Image 1 (cartoon, rainbow, N blue to C red):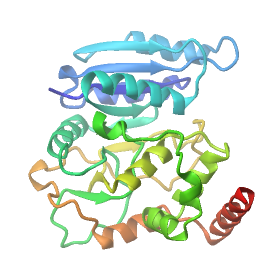
Image 2 (tube, one colour):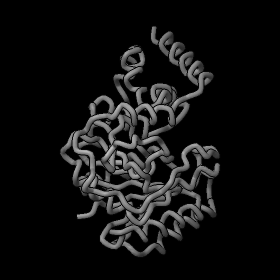
Image 3 (tube, rainbow, N blue to C red):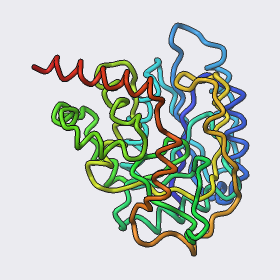
Image 4 (cartoon, rainbow, N blue to C red):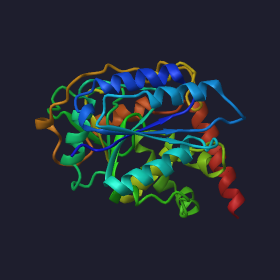
Length: 300
């Protein structure tokens, strides 16, 4: 049985429509349940929020469509945490999208195959997006493992989602350990600093807490060597993403499931390329280091 698809939307009607239209064309859409979580307006009436909800109610092309309309604005992080918890509790697995992602025709086929293949192989989640990184010519698999989750078209299972401590109760122990921070940052020098920013309230991110839970569990995310998802929200229209071309990537229609990587090990060459893509500038690393020092001093 195909995993249910959860789509989180808010106030971007043009992006939402593109996301849904692409998803409808993906192989397996007609056999999949689509559950749309629509966040509420921040202040009173918002015509764009209403337009997005109208699009949601007119959506067809799936086995069935369910719509959950939030009465007030609860923000993306809370919407995703509550929405995924509800759906995954019912179905045991889920594919998750946001309103600024354009998937390829092969996205659903790949995601369902990967969720089935990796469900008992020590994997924390499955990604549909892959950044434009260097894959070694002698790498023969169609997927690779990285100790960093992906929030741009992904899937997981209830037994993994339930491992997440959304309060990150051991944060002080983690941030005090240089060794733990270094290990966590192997897939991007921004990770520890992002978790700190979440802790002190500078950001509200479900993703970095999910990523940290995967790190603690010792279970990586599986990525396709070629992306099946394009991000159409890097135009500055979103709440959490500035205008950038950094994450543009070539999108494919097919990933060969016969060449899924079997041994869940990190290829150091791919990890190095991945780390470069998500690395911080020297200036940003200094700022992050000072923030960590300031927080550690406040603990005393």
